[in-house]
Length: 140
Image (cartoon, rainbow, N blue to C red):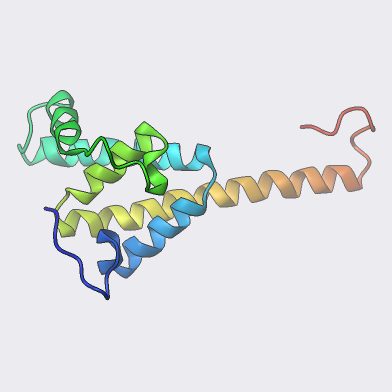
């Protein structure tokens, strides 16, 4: 599934604008969000591959992904965490139609996480304004 890249598309995911934006947003996300998205991607890709009889179980999928990984590739942002690296490699090796579907799912998960974090921060600010916290405990 790996393709050659040209000057217009520096990275494999830049060919699809939604996928490109999702990857950039994921890259800018915190570690917890990246791992959450990665686990969801792995689950969705595994279910898709098993449903279409490309593999018979998750272990076959993981073995195929690990065979395709370049152990020397550690310079990309997603190579730092093994879970994120596995998910992104699975995504890269998925058909373009699956990538498009997953890009939308990635964007939704990241947006939901950002909204959740924003809601917690707003709640903290409201409680602080109402002097709900004393000076010794500023955590929820």
